[in-house]
Amino acid sequence: MTLNIDTPAPARKTGPSRSSGRRGAGRGGSGLARFDLRATPYFLVSPYFLLFALFGLFPLVYTAWVSLHDWELAGDKTFLGIDNYVELIADETFWNAVLNTVGIFVISTIPQLVLALLLANALNKRIRGRLFFRLGVLLPMVTSVVAVAVVFTQLYGRDYGMVNWFLGLFGAEPIEWQNQSWSAWLAISTMIDWRWTGYNAIILLAAMQTIPKDLYEAASLDGASATRQFWQITVPMLRPTLIFVVFVSTIGGLTLFAEPVMFEGSPLMTGGATGQYQTVAMFIVKEAFRDFDMGYASAAAWMLFALILVGILINYSFTRRIGGKK
Image (cartoon, rainbow, N blue to C red; front, side, top):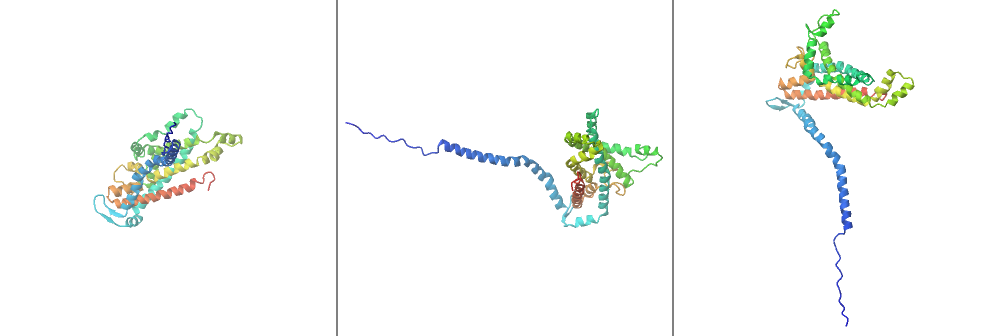
C-alpha cells in the first residue's frame, strides 16, 4: 500500500530582494552625493558672507539709519529725514575736507603708482642682490605709521628740519609746512608714498613674473628695445593687476586718516588752524567723537562712500583703456 503525503511548498519571501535593496541604496547614495556636491561649495564660502553681513553690511545699513536722525552719542534721537544731508551739502567745512582729501590723493597716488611700476620692473631684472632689494622695499610696511609720522614731522620742521636745511643750501627760505595747503599736502603725500610704494611694487612684481618669457624673446628677435617691450608687453599684460592696485589705492587714499592726524600732532582733528589739511575721515571722527553728533557724522560717512564709488569709476574708466581696450 502506498502512502501519498503532500509536502507543503516552501513559502516565498515577500520582502525586497538584495538586488532591489542595493538599487535603493544606490539611488539614495547618488542623491546624497548630488546634494553634497551642490551644497558643499555654498557651505565653504558661507563664513565670508556671514562675516561680511555682520561686519560689513550691518554697519552700512545701521549708519544709513543713524544718518537720518539727530543722533547724539549719549542723548535723544530725533528723526530728521534727509536734513543732515541737506545741511552737509551746504557745509563749507565738509567741502574743504573733500578738497583736501582729493588733493592729497591725487599728488600722492599718481607718483606712487608710477614709482611702484618702475620699481617692480627694475626688481624683475637680473641684478645682484635681487632678493635683498625685494625684501628692502617691504621695510616701510614693518614700521608703525605713528613712527613714520613722527620722523617725517621732524624732517619737515621749520627751524631744524632736514628738508628746510637742504632747501637752504640753494638759498630758499624756511617753509612753514603745516601752515599752507600745498605744503601740508606735499608733506603728507611723501609719508604715504614712502610707506605704500614698496607694497604696490611687490604686487606688480608678482604679476610681472607670470608674463611668459617667450613674448620678450620674440620681441627681442623683432628688434624691439627694452623700453618698447615694457610699454607694449609688460604694461598691457599687467592690466588686471593695475586695476586692482588702483582700486585699493583709491580706497586707501580717500579714507586717509592716520598720517594727517599724526602730522597735526593734536587730537582736535581740525587739520590745522584753518583746516588746510583736514580730510573727510578726520571730519567724520571730529563730528562723531568730539562734537558727539553721530547723525551728522553718519551722513558724512555715506557721502565719503559715494565719493569713493565715484573715484573708483573714474579710475576704472582710465585703467580699462590700458592695452588698447575701450
